[in-house]
Amino acid sequence: MTFTFPGCPRCGAQLDGGPVLFHCSACGRAVYAADLDLEVTARPLVPVVTL
Ligand SMILES: [Zn+2]
Image 1: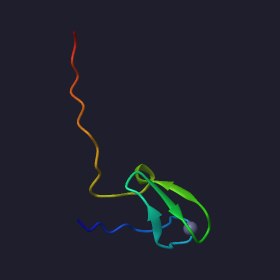
Image 2 (image 1 turned 30 degrees about the vertical axis):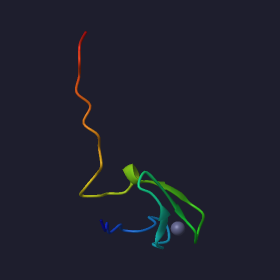
Image 3 (image 1 turned 135 degrees about the vertical axis):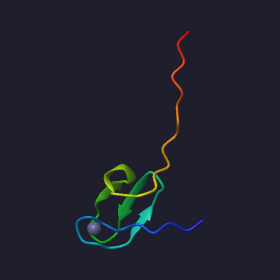
């Protein structure tokens, strides 16, 4: 699968790593996928179960 990420929010460089935590090799910033404004997020659906 191929995802297109907007890149580092600080310098715009391509991010390494993922899919949860990305690392920018240009400025050394760690970027969480949750911090990126993505249309598609791999958010697990956790059903609320009351015992
Ligand atoms: Zn950067």
